[in-house]
Image (cartoon, rainbow, N blue to C red; front, side, top):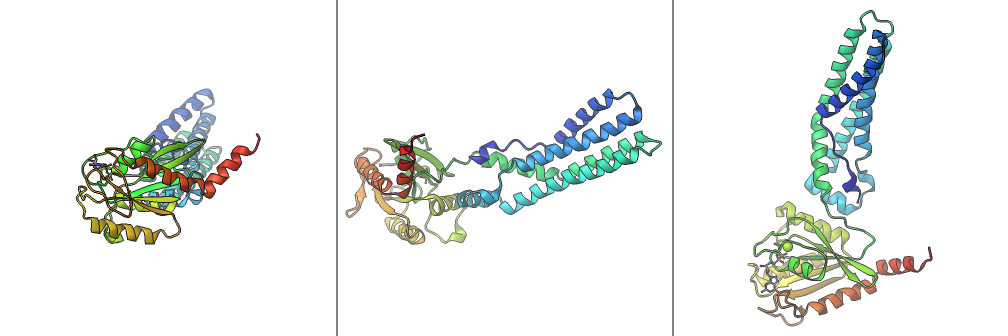
Length: 325
Ligand SMILES: Nc1nc2c(ncn2[C@@H]2O[C@H](COP(=O)(O)OP(=O)(O)OP(=O)(O)O)[C@@H](O)[C@H]2O)c(=O)[nH]1
Ligand SMILES: [Mg+2]
């Protein structure tokens, strides 16, 4: 995934220290004092320019990201603000180069190249410091984004949703490679997690989401919003888990109401409801399972696999496997 490869973004001081060290090494090589001062300036501005532009170019281009990653980035930060900071870095790179080139040119006609070298260094340092907050912001964003799960659009994806504490993570841990934290309180899962369930040569991507409460969109917290982003953007199938025993702390009525809302908001995406904690209470007319006793879990897995078999994504991956290399 693109986010994993974003390099650390240096601070203004780190960029300047590195550039000054490099410039000092160049300066030593020249025996003529005026030529040495000119080389010093050229080395500083090109090193500053390269480092800033490298940070801009190695940041992901948000124009090419899938809607899921754009939504998540907007929930956690703001794509607009990230773009502005990247623009500021580009401005600083170009301005430092322009200022540096002009000083280096002036040195050829100057009597006092030492004074010009000092002035140029101070101007470039001030330009880089002007974008220090942008550098720090971009690094903070980078540290969070690179930890987002790698959700692959080409893989069949089941998003598990429901109220908090109903057993979503317990189910995913049982049937997939995921190791999602399970605990007897709401909002244990704070972000999106991905596990994989192997079916022969195919793989199902299972997304664990934080619980969503049945309340108006504007009152939802960031944790809940991440779940909505996953449900609406990546799901090929939605598995909605209900705890009919109400041991989760929420009434069956509220859970059924949320179920209807999510189903209405995601029309066109296959939607299945499963009752969990059947060891405590079952609900007739639905598939029932217990992730504790594991009763009914195989039936739920078979039902998911049926959706995979009829999914266009499955056909694509089969065709790909049949084409000889
Ligand atoms: N009796 C019983 N308890 C269960 C079952 N499945 C899960 N639990 C318990 O329910 C509690 C919540 O389980 P989680 O898997 O963390 O629930 P979640 O839906 O992922 O919760 P959030 O991440 O907070 O949204 C834990 O204490 C589990 O041990 C079940 O089938 N039967
Ligand atoms: Mg959970």
